[in-house]
Image (cartoon, rainbow, N blue to C red; front, top):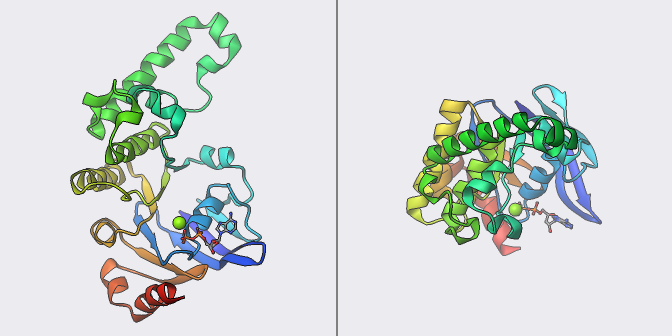
Length: 253
Ligand SMILES: Nc1ncnc2c1ncn2[C@@H]1O[C@H](COP(=O)(O)OP(=O)(O)O)[C@@H](O)[C@H]1O
Ligand SMILES: [Mg+2]
């Protein structure tokens, strides 16, 4: 589904991603792990159009997406979760979801003036969908709370819910488990698995929590020094000498 071919990106003299090639299969929950500074976040930023690669290609469903702007990548139905920012924190959980789909009918002045009925209908549909999504991630009882008042784990669920409003095909998550307590973590992993199985959404996620990776992801891709070191099942990765070396090497540098 997603093909990264020989992608390279440097910042000044610092090589962040170096001739990196990897694939994410449709329908998978693929993990991207590796020591700090391996280039994982930079690679995500390249995939989502936030950085242009110096070299190499990225294909999504056979079409090139490298060089597209973030909004153009979004239109390909590749979605990346973002942290709940300050302005989102001041809106309710439900309002957060109703913001998501781009190009709502109501944004067009012509529509606002002359097609009031259509706007109302669309808003009703949007609300219905938002409520359904909130039910799916079990946040329905919090729909009228301010997003800013949610716990860290609940915010992660809200981020996931926001991504669902856009009907994505591929969702990129950068450390979804960070700062999430074990109970909500189970909810989060159950939701990701459910979205993958029931809605055929593919996930590509960076994660440091190896328990989460072991439980949720297959395959696991290990990145080190800007490129793919190896790929395998969680069990294979756990036993690989090179992976251990990459992590230990990274710590001693
Ligand atoms: N915007 C940037 N400007 C300069 N250097 C950067 C920038 N983003 C990342 N880097 C460097 O690129 C390397 C890879 O970083 P990053 O992609 O954040 O790694 P990871 O997410 O695997 O920890 C690091 O050496 C980092 O300092
Ligand atoms: Mg990172």
